[in-house]
Length: 238
Image (cartoon, rainbow, N blue to C red; front, side, top):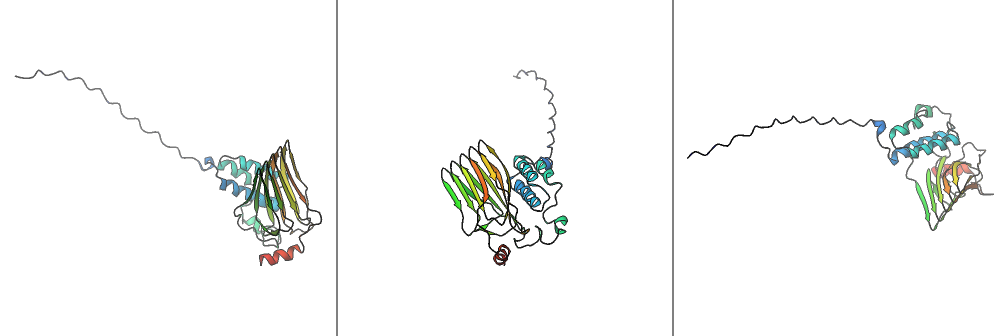
């Protein structure tokens, strides 16, 4: 006996698949900035200030913008009017200026920063030690002391980034170097006693940062000098 054939249901047309949306490549300027990107730009700004291309105020403004930048595109305009490290403009500088080998040493690579941290405690760096190009001092309900009066400077420019929150950061330098800086105190004190050495080849220490309900103080230590500054640096650097 034949089975009764069931009526076939009409097939519904299959809608064509929509093409996938093309992936839009991210422009280089829109790439998120890394810490290394920010440090690279900050190093260019520090060298520019040491060469006299930027004032201390201009340097402070640009460094603040560096560490607030989110993308590479926000960083590049900050150094667009400055020569690249080792560029032709720097090579054409007069002998003895920063960027050429001097008694304070060549510029060299930045290297890692030294970190001094005091949280509900104290941290001290003093005595005979070699100062790096960059030192970060952070005090939270504590105190940090950075004493450079017996330190050895292997480069002309040294930058100290100081942050104090309900604490204190104290920086002491010898009287025959240059001391500069810029920062902000929020219900606190940020004070840098500006000092200009008579020796154009003397090291330059720049202190930047801020204090919140705390204090950051940088000043020369009376009566402390780096004796025979240039000779000692030449011997140390070989």
